[in-house]
Amino acid sequence: VTPSEHSSGDRRRQGSITKNGNSYARKLLVEAAWSYRYPARVNPDIQRRHEGIPKPIIDRAWDAQLRLCRRYRKLAARGKNVNTG
Picture 1 (cartoon, rainbow, N blue to C red):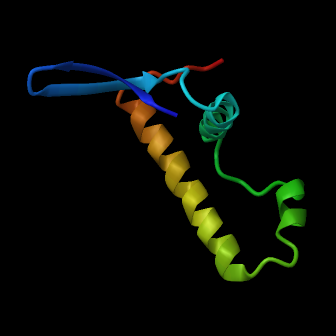
Picture 2 (picture 1 turned 180 degrees about the horizontal axis):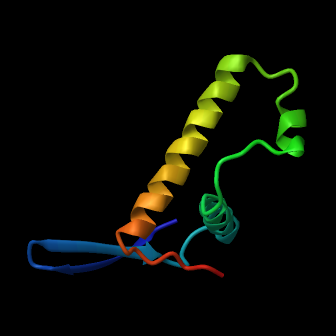
């Protein structure tokens, strides 16, 4: 996954990801990013996956979920393109 780049002199500006590289990895990254549009929650499927996993790992995953959802909301509030669809 490679960001596009527009450079001139000392200025370096990176854009959205290009279509170079592994297409499957790019699709996974985009799908994961889209999931953060929704509020953080633990649905029954995820609850079943948590069985047998140590509590510190579950807590770390939950913290990451909250952080990424919060980051998405802040970016959207600042007027960043949310690309729905």
